[in-house]
Length: 370
Image (cartoon, helix red, strand yellow):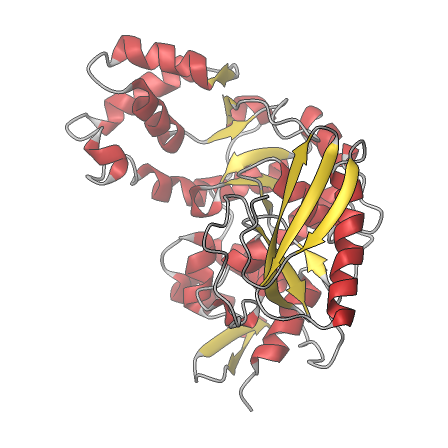
């Protein structure tokens, strides 16, 4: 029997620890999820708060400071919060894909076309060296070496060509400092590990996001040869089909979730990997009665009701007041609205403990901006 979207939904939520909060530590959750999306500072904190019982944000700050957690460019060329072992073993697989980006004609309007990639990389290695460096300082050095090019584009190229990570203070709890960059190996005091099999990485992906198609795997990782990786796993994976007849793979030792299991309201951070790690997102993004807000501001985040995206929210802080405004994607029942308000109030207290909290549930499809 084909797997329904509801089976896939509940299985995804269970493996993402979104059906009930977990007792895993912050580092253990990062390992299980193969990192949390951390392109901006707040989302990994929201993601961890939604997944871990009594989550303490200081665990992230401490982890970044003592280097047991790092913010590094990985899947899809975006920053992820991961453990050092994952940084060292995943980066060698991601790096070749990142290095293809800067010399394409479409990259920054062809800003780097005509330059020798090896020479540009060598300059980047010499500039960044073994010590962390701010983006502003990198721009100064870029202008010295390439006075006829936009220094911002040169710096962006260096950050694609070199395995790099962001060092504290950016990423600490409520610290949105400008990025300071370091090469991975000097910061962690260990070499990259190119021997880690892609197949093992994909098996871990299935444990956190499966069942999934090879196109889902590719969407998550942006790596090629997913069919080859699955083949290498042999009988460690089993196959299913979905309602559209597509082949889905899963870890052979894992069970599917009960589709009738209740799913509590959850508010995720923007760009949460639970929403971005499948080509077919219908297992969590439902067809809504109203389109997204026409003038939705940037950094809007999803509200899950009964396991599916049912609206968007954004927090606005001004003059000692914190407003969490929610735009439903469909009409909610009174019970759903009450559950959303309760979860939103708890999240707002977590995010802005010094501010006067206010949760505002708007009309379906309403503009989130005050």
